[in-house]
Image (cartoon, rainbow over all chains, first blue to last red; front, side):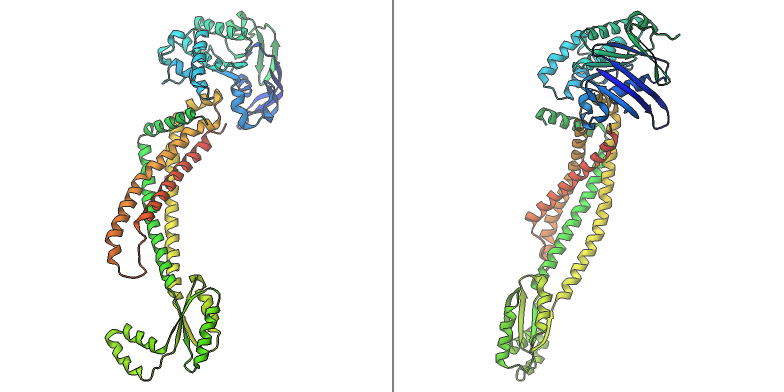
Length: 228
Length: 297
């Protein structure tokens, strides 16, 4: 569960990105975050995995109160949150298999359980036959699926995606969205910032619209609501 | 830490050494230069200290007894001196013995003094040695206050001068070495910064998937340690070979009693160990400095 109460965020350079956000997202929800560029979507998302700290306000993620959390515990918070980016952020010199296994290696899983789990997750995203490929040898959609596989390999309760289809063509975008839906069906919360009107209006889910750092709209099965 | 994790950190750290190419060479070079100077300096300081100690342990107090003193009083004075706390050894040297040693010490010219054998103008003397050379001055002053004492001599001023010289040498050397150590640390931390920048994507992914800061830091720590240790190889060789050479060729040429070089073993090995430890410290210090700044969450 994610809970924000009256959250403000002002960056050191004086930019006020969030101006009093309160929201509750239950476990297993699929939520789109929409809004113009610079509206505060990215900041909103970064607060959840503690990339940024709020200037004031309360944030609770999976029963952990972030402002009372010790700095040392941050890595453990992140092990329960998978993050997917627009630019994939894969390591170019590692194979698909290694890129995914990496997420388990750094949390010191045993080689045996790493192997089992990586093959399992490759199967889930439909890339079992590409395990030995390097990222550069894959299409954009495939690369994004690798980064999704890496995000879910820890079995996190929350997956956060910052414009995951931003670099992909429409057909590929739909494949990616299908993958997210499957993950969501297994009970994982999905929070996705997006600029895609098509996706939001077709795959109906909760929509939170942010403008000038405040939530202006929060609807179950909402619409994109902006002209593209 | 699991052994598997440890070997991973070690592998990663070693990879970076090769990845950084010329920066690695530069920082190892800086450590090498520093450590050679540290080694030479330490060898000199330790030996100077040893000289000073040798001289100091040779320091004796010579108590000259008043010419007019009765025999009983001379003996009583000797007993009294023996009672002083910290006195190790006291022996009596009669005026005849004093004259004899004076004549002997002057060689040919000493013959002139033989005339005095009939009517010896010298004093009886007690030669006193302190258990701890540091007590020499205190004991000498105490004896000075006794009856029947004509004068008290001891070579403390020579020792003091030598210690003073040692102190100056040490300060100059330490300042020089501190500057060099800082340069080496700076170069190592720069080299590691390059590694960190080159691996910034990797590090951000590590953080994202929940690697602890300790886990992220370890490879850089290993890298610094290896740079430091590699930098100490040449200095250790130089010190071992050089000291052996100096010991074999120079030490035998010097015939002054207190100038005695410390024997090669174990001294040179201790020196090698100190150099290795300083190298490792410089490396780790450099890596900790650069990593701390870069890995703030």
